[in-house]
Structures are given as structure tokens and as C-alpha cells.
Amino acid sequence: MTSSFEIHPYPARLSDAERDRALKVLRDGVAAGRLSHDTFVRRMELALAARRPDELAVLTSDLSTEGRLSRLVFGTVGAVSGFTVRLRRAWQAERLPKLLLPHPAGGHPLRIGRDPASGLRLNHETVSRLHAELRHQGGLWILRDLGSTNGTTVNGRRVTGAAVVREGDQVGFGQVTYRLSVD
Image (cartoon, rainbow, N blue to C red; front, top):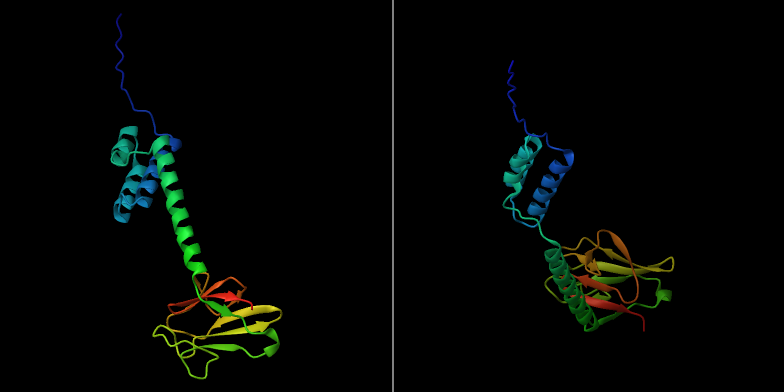
């Protein structure tokens, strides 16, 4: 008696780890600008519906993963370029004009703007008429934006409302920037 068994090779079911690896490659691809958002969303849907490893391979074949050497090179380039940006900012910061903080005993806030009645009059087109005020309150220096059009910044970050400032901070009124100083 001969019996024949027919073997149906069913492909192995995808593991969650395989699917997660494919999704990570897709996320990295969109983060690196190699995929548009729409393409990423469509491929992600296909990856979640995939049943076989070859279906995942097709979705990620044009997004080769970086090797260890590539990550090292790109990481080094990123660190060097970050250093040059920090160096440029430090160089520019030292060349900024100083804005002396008023004596705290004065008690009155220093108004900053284009208005002739301002304590610090800045005649620049990016500075509002009533741009900001600097006051000493509770032992701290407080810089408050007065609804200026082009904004007030402290160390490159826009001030919404008020911010505490210290000696050495960079303060900007529109495109006019100073370094705060005491005496």
C-alpha cells in the first residue's frame, strides 16, 4: 500500500519582530527624507497587512539600512557640523554690543522701543514702538514683550509674555541683538 502525502508549503507567519524591523526602516526612511508622508502611510498600511517576509522586503527594498561604518561616519559629520554651529554662535556672541542692566534701586522699568519716550530707543524697522520692558523684581531681572510685531528673544528663543534674564544672556528686539552686562 502506497500512500502519497501532498505537502503544501505554507510560508511561515511573520513575527512581530520582523514587522517591527520593517516599520522602523520605513520610519527612518521618512525621517531621512527618502519617503514622502503619503508613501510612508501607504507602505505602513501594507506592512501591517503583510503575511509573508517577501511582502515586507518589497516595501523596504529601496530603503537600505545603514551599516555600522555609515552610522559612524554620519554621526561624526553631524558632531563636527554641530560644533561649527556652536563655534559660530560663540564668536558672534562675543562681538555683540553690550546692554548694561540698569541699577536695581531705580525701581522703574526700562522701556525698549522706537518711541522717543523709551528709556532705550532703538531706531530700527524691526523694532516696535513699544517693544519690551526690562524690570528688576524680587531679585530677578524680568524681560517682558509688550506685544511687539517681530518678537523679543532671549538666547534665541522667543519670549511669550515674560522671561527671567541674567548677565551674559543674548536678548533680541526684532533683528537688534545685545548681550546683557552688569557694569
